[in-house]
Image: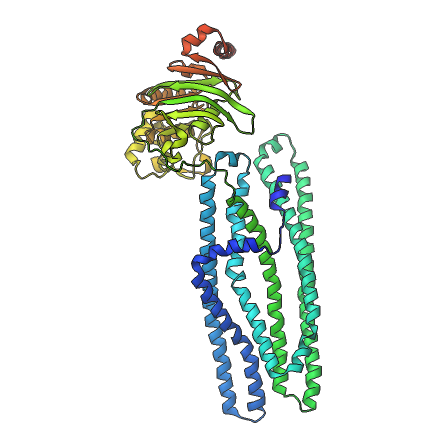
Length: 597
């Protein structure tokens, strides 16, 4: 919960010049749209205030003098101004919305591109839901700023300027009377902004708590149900939801007070105009047309004031969202590529670790002084208890993480001197926890790589035995795969993962507990396929089932981040060390299972 508060609930400034400059940087490529929209705003802002002035002319010059032809002319001008305003407003709305969507598109692309570059170390400590929120909700919150905030605020300002210009041009003293309520309006607006700001912070705080609780308990629904905690969790959710409702009602209260107050001040201003202006008309110092125009201007004047208050809320939301977005974009937890990378050509597959030390956090090393060599074409197995550092070796070989000390060489080249993408081009990996994307079986094998043809896909699937269940589907390789492969069994997903790895024809194949989730029959088929596939390839196999690695060329035994034993299956059994004990434990487990059966 504290994590949400530190990031999602902090409101920040209502206006931050530094953030605004960065936001305007995204508008710069479309500055011609902005300039055009501002010019349209200046022009269209005058079309509204000009109508009361035309009404004043119609009353004082034509209606009073019974000039019917002149009245028709004014009517045509009024209709023309309305039509012209509607046309310009259409283009203005289109251009501002177009500008907003272009900027949002660019920003989302930048966020997604940046996330792709971040190292796994960043994802270890950052909730995925937060990243999704940055690219969706927070970016969308900026939409109003770009489409109706930055540009449309000019419209409100220019309308006020034009109204004041016409008012003072027609009658200076009546203008001062009209604006006499302005100090009260300004004070009320600032008070509303303060209360609305506090209310907005409370709403966001409780919304974050509501989202957090929902996400956590939907994800852990199986635990809730098995321990019969539905009623307790429902009660807790009810309390959180009630708090959220309360702060929303409080927020509505401020709006419900502010907008009628503005209307009341507008009515008071009109009353002052009628009182003062009426007296001036009686004394012959003012015309009826001017009085009528001032009443219209007063009604028009308070509308943009209300709109500007709404723009303040848009600005406040945008500042909070942009601060979180830029915090993500400024995060440089990145595995850096060398300035002048060495190009790999014809990789043989020799891997060498030289005195490698590695820690995920500070000096808490999970790998300590690791040194070993894997020759081209060799199959090396890595075994050890949970937490021994087996998967960490894979993580640093693929440069998902950088090591703290030592060197890792591929064909006698330091992998830190190789471009990450170039390095990974020669490596395929099959993990215990298989991830499948929404799409179909074919796209999950070739990951939409156009160089991996359907023929290669079918060939890879056949080698690992995945074709046996794929061909049973009506759509075969075009069978729909839902999110995370929900419609497939664990074993089927594992086989697709094998086919994916093989379709890329890697020089180095990594199997991280790759057969732990399949049944005995499927494991046997995969083992047969692996024996064929490993010919001419370097392979690293991490396994808990020692029976699957007995034919490995070399077995490395890790214990608490250190290499304790190295040798083949028979050599390690003869040593009667850690490997022997692990083997005996598994052998006894198998005997007990068989006897129970």
